[in-house]
Amino acid sequence: MYERKVIPNLKCGLDLIGEVLYGKWKIRLLWFINQGYKRPSELLRKIPDASRRVLNLQLKELEDHELITKKIYPVVPPKVEYSLTDFGISLIPVISALGYWGDPNDERLRRLILRRLSS
Image (cartoon, rainbow, N blue to C red; front, top):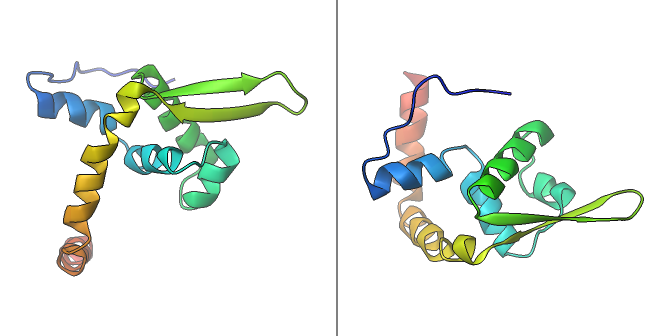
């Protein structure tokens, strides 16, 4: 497993939130779990560009940060479901606000991102 060589800078709230949400799929995972997609296979279908391995790693990190809980049902084959904790639910309005900002600025953001990628 990956071990950090540098201790992250955690001097303010923005540093902390960045550390907790850093990861390409974490915000989307939280959003989709909030929308009712609980099983790993459902989340993988909602985020088809992500590999199962990366999703599992990011789900584990969200669990370690107490934003989600994982329930394993004692059945064969094993059944796993994720749900938001109260702490995770408190983050949903923040994610929603980011989406509300991104939606009206989508063309501009897309153009800037593509320009950066092509240079």
